Length: 227
Image (tube, rainbow, N blue to C red; front, side, top):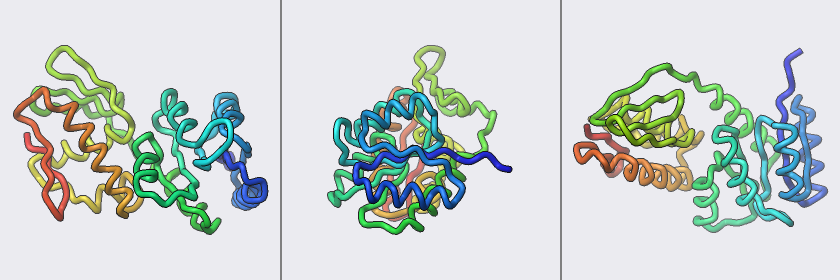
């Protein structure tokens, strides 16, 4: 029998939390349910689940704060936010601090399950052993380390590393915005696009040491790494 995937569910509405838990358990998931962010962090550190489903508005510690703390220790675990917030900046903040997906309440359990499977499949993305050279940079993709010449090293996040990898592989060519959004974010909606813009800005700052390298925005199409 296949090992069950363990999901940490942090939801302070008892009825909703129980419905989600029971629904996921019928799909062969092992679910750890917590009703506040403080308790959820303790369960995360002790149980090491494989995916997090976090309500944004929780007592003692909100979902965004919890995600930030988790990301300090684990940059790859998938995180889905459940939110009643509809403000664009709230959703973009969720992506910026390390969230992989979000669902606005009310939502269907079936949609949540589809998104969970999608994220779990994406984490199986096959890593390459390649160490890539471009300009004055060396990029160790498996270790997610970007090094300028022979000195300073920068540790990239999981998403920064994958985005840079695709840009390098397509250097001097347009990287289709929709394609990369679907590959790394799972969809190409407005909020995912805003999140990608944030990560592009972060990469530009890391690459500014080499004046011969730039990431340009090709309006209506995507991005191009010029090297």
